[in-house]
Amino acid sequence: SFEFCTPVQAATIPLLCSHKDVAVDAATGSGKTLAFVLPLVEILRRSTSYPPKPHQVMGVIISPTRELSTQMYNVAQPFVSTLPNVKSVLLVGGRDVRADMNTIEEEGCNVLIGTPGRLSDIMERMDILDFRNLEKQVNSIISRLPKQRRTGLFSAAQTEGVEGMAKAGLRNPVRVEVRAESKSASSNQLINSKIPSGLHLEYLVCEADKKSSQLVDLLIKNKNKKLIVYFMTCASVDYWGLVLSKIPALKSISLIPIHGDKKQSARDKALASFTKASSGVLLCTDYLGFTGSKFVMFMQYDPPQDPRMFNHRVGRTARLGKEGRSIVFLLPEEEDYVEFLRRKGVSFQEKKCYQEASDVIPFIRSLAMKDRAVLDKGVEALVSFVCAYKLHHCSYIFRWKSLEIGKLAMGYGLLRFPSVSEVKQGRLSSEGFTPVEGGQVSGETKKAKVTSRERETARRENSKKAVAASPATTYSNKRKLTGKQRQTIQTAEDEEEMARDYRLLKKLKKGSVEEDDFAKLTGADNF
Image (cartoon, rainbow, N blue to C red; front, side, top):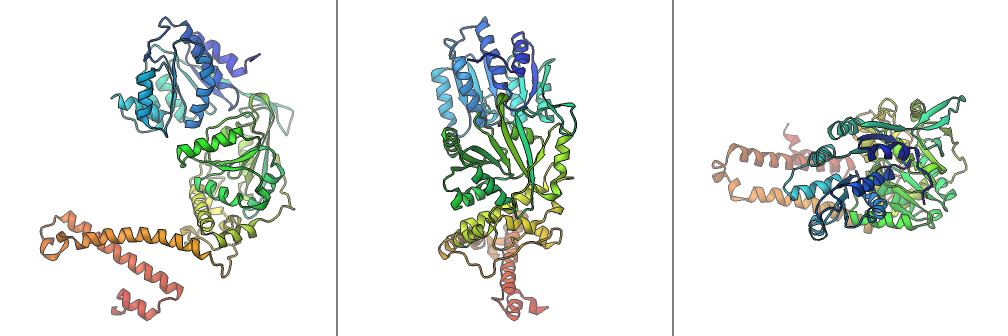
């Protein structure tokens, strides 16, 4: 039912079919998948080895994520199935590798579609190679393929890693770059951009303690649409997935959190649920390699840590000429990011903060007072965000020392300011944070959390007691130990003493231990 080719397909398909290697750089959503699936099917059809033997691999499609591999398999399968006696196999992680091996042995395989890790596992079990990282995995897989082959490298961003793989796997490749033409906002000049032409980009500048209220307001106004909200860390996805689902105004909206740390079964279930739904919100990190034509709006609650991921994020909508909308949230000190992207051909329009948006911070704080999980996940999310912010690739724009972490903590709805070393050392200011005086957390949930901590403490204590009580650590046997063993025992004893002193110091600060008692217990009264 395809009546015409997209530009990337029109440029690439003839090259691959005429035995040329290609390195393709085109926007997300430009039709790259069919640009290599169709030539693959055509080359197999023309092959002198057709029909292939059951275990004769004639094509390999490698994708960085499980979700993208699954989608590529679903796109390719209808075309591959038109070739009699040709079997395609999906190989992704999260499933038993032995089951994949059995499938290959019993049913055969001619086209492999999967992630580098699982392809590596299959090859390793076949005594081929050991692999360490993504680039090495891909290059090692390529090294096992026949020299006489056609190779296509498709990406929305030709980064250094991609260029390295191109040098290793491609021979004299034809480089194809596809850009969308759009008019500059400040002039009538045409500019080239890797952003889809139908995408409307906006940026919203607001203080850190107002971001969550603005997010909730936008979600309510677009509750009948299909949206994706990006966060910088997995902990942020978990926290906001928990909090947003408890806000009464969002009860009717399906909120689905997903990130790379979740189990594969949970990820599959979440994506299947979101794909089938007519509306809803997917909360995710940059890990998500997921495409779809029904998404009409994307929100970037946190700008990507790597600015090259910006195109990947916004390219999930406005695919194949359709209309789409994307909003990126920025703090006042991050506004230079707009000019940075404009210089790269990304045109924005400013969206003003909605001043009448309801303040959700009091409600989030009330949740934290009732539910220990909300409190703990909020602290974890904030700390993980600060750690990720420090490692931002655009550190000259996203300066972590300029973070108003007090307002940030308010925006996360925290009851008390978390223990952040940068604040203690005076490198970050806690100004703007108002702690909740006398805020007590629900006793039942607090007990569960304390029990978890006690289990961890007990595990460490038992481990150290086992070392101390072992016959080898008695005085009569210490001389039989090696120097390294004695050092290990001494280190454990020193760590235990330091931990005990630290616990006493915390009690002293809280007022539960008197200074005289503290001095006696720590031995400070002897000095």
